[in-house]
Image 1: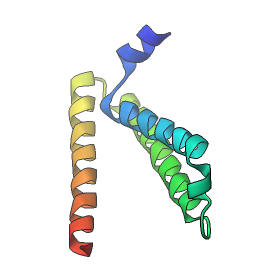
Image 2: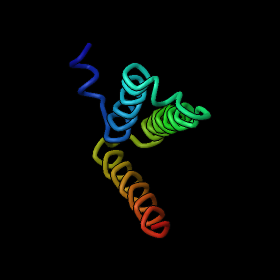
Image 3: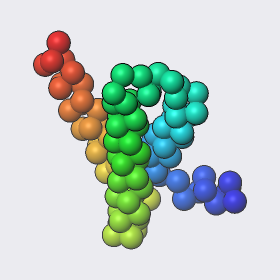
Image 4: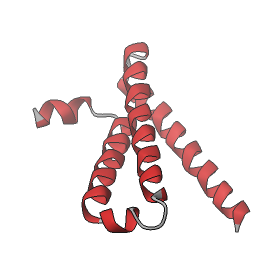
Length: 95
């Protein structure tokens, strides 16, 4: 099963699964700090779970539409790079 997962794994699915695992670990080990004040930590974790799920859906659609794996990985790498650049620019403009 692990061999099949690694063979069909793409950049976006690996990122999404890592994000979902991070959310699960954050909920398990930092429950008290997430629940501090008004519970905005939980809202943030839920938003990350939604982003991870959306990433898996986009990955599934791209796998159905595009047949070449190299093309899928390149396109998903560009998507993730643009996402990181957008977040970085947003954070720099707020500072």
